[in-house]
Length: 345
Image 1 (cartoon, rainbow, N blue to C red):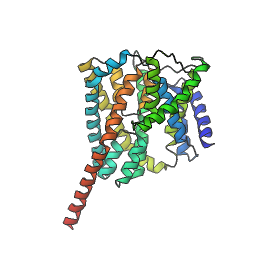
Image 2 (tube, rainbow, N blue to C red):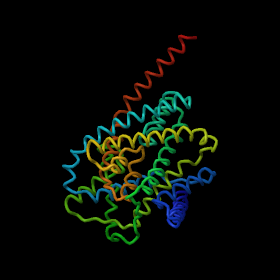
Image 3 (tube, helix red, strand yellow):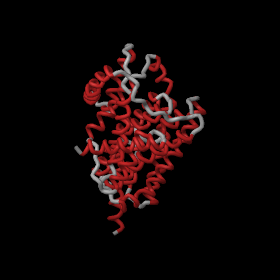
Image 4 (cartoon, rainbow, N blue to C red):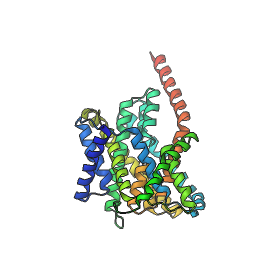
């Protein structure tokens, strides 16, 4: 019931944002309204499984635009991947310095507050290594919310760009049956231990169907519901966060996010110069946001979402694969610091 209640509030926020003419109203409206209610102490929550299911719907929807010719095009995107990895490394080092030197946090908390990865995994891993889970959770939630809002505004005011919302009339009702394949793709990807199985599995299923010339067009209202669920989910993460704690973290989180956006802009310009990929495409693929949210913004802006999703998925895959090594290095660093402190006593 709490999920339904939250989504109804999110829908109200989406309608208000649409009425006011805000960019990407069905995601930003729920995000802003639910965030305000959460900070006021109103119990809002989106069931994690529901959020992951609609992330799968988003993946399935993106896969319907897949064409056979894209398979060969993937091989030409490796320079973008290399530049993305360099961008992530520079952003991680810079933001870790912000949290460690300016905010005065320990190394583990600083690193995991800076990692642009899946929030739940980052918080859990940071907590296991002795970091401050509350700092990490607030910093990561603020990062995602700020990136979604700022990126939407950038594309809204950018000359030659526009953010279009899906319409209720598009698509056929019979195509709704294809959504039954979402949990199938999710389960299959989970068995194969693929990163972000709930998103990548349905995407691969619908992409395979599209390559075999099966025409799928989901109704537009399904995507509006997906917008509302994802926006409300981000906002509901602030529930239980004291305003004093939020204010304490927010200044450093805003600074870290701003530096991350500037780093993305710098490497986007470099990607554009070296590869010829449009600046808007490169920027969206490099901003430190969630793959689902960035794919939605790309679609609303008329940008190929598959390129954006591909680069972000590679980023998540690399972060997941490197997490054990990073954890090992942090443990060694912590032990060295402990020994140094004991020797000075």
